[in-house]
Picture (tube, rainbow, N blue to C red):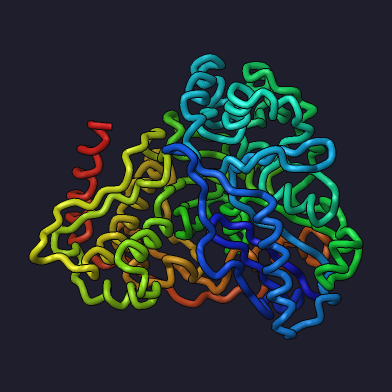
Length: 494
């Protein structure tokens, strides 16, 4: 049997068709080939069209089918990973009411801060495990305050993965995991949060039916099946936010295990069996894919908004004629430290780990007689690595002691400059695996459809590609100290 995994990313849709027996991808594609744009109608805003996601999902599946490396009718289940925290609003006819306010949009920061104070900081942190901050609930409150006509027409509130599952099946549902990432869930009461819904004045009926992450969320509609050459009625049997799904793809499911990813945004994700939280909500706790009332499994998530998006921006502003491989080759020729050039990669909205500050991106200490585009490429990747170190130190303050971090060999981890900078800055060894979000979503579909009996069976063929150990010299500690001083100076003036 074959499994179809869909990864609804910010920059593109990725699709993989996986052999259920070997857990290996037969084909993986993305659509479109160039990064999808983010609409920013005002500074700090970020939106995308859900209907565009759906068009791209269909195009990606058809692109995979066109390889003719498999029979599409052999696909037995579908799984979805998706960009977290996006707000999708539909009416009674399942029509989208407005573009999605996506994860890196900053417009609701003040609204979330007001809720944090009104509900009570200790109550928010102990029940929600987070400040309402800039998450989905606060974005919905922004719509209620600023677009009352649209708010009045809302039938259901969805996350991006819920929307794609609906387009495939016609059914809507959510999960405790999804509700927790939107800051709608009370972990102590194990129910929708009376505090959040009461303070914001939301009707709980706006939330779809709650299901488990691993179970059918609907079945493929006949018209969709026909248009995509798939078998009618196969289940959409898994959906999870991209960082939870990335952790699943790396078999990071038990307490103490840690995953990292460096796509459009950068994330370190650790699994815990404690209902813990950061007092400043700089790192965030959500229900992991295998969380239940009986068995606590939380994902502790550090997010950096400006990682791959910074690398892409550097490519474009230096002419766009080089591919990422060529940029990495150029960066490799520059010594660590980039001859004193530093980059702060924080130009993609409010940064949670900086207490929702928006300090923008900065390139510092430019020497017009010394620095070249190669220096810029290296300094960009080092700046991203240093931001991971800054965030990981926050996680260490909260009791995380990483022994090894697992990552897929994809996105920025394809660059040996970035990978070595990451390891040497964080002082944490990294194991690289041949997997990505769409493969993880396919394996999740197999678990949700009962094709695999358990996680051990689902990951029995997982193979490590490489291990990277930190160097013992203190160079990166010195560079990080300089970078951190520049960051904290910018934060003082924010």
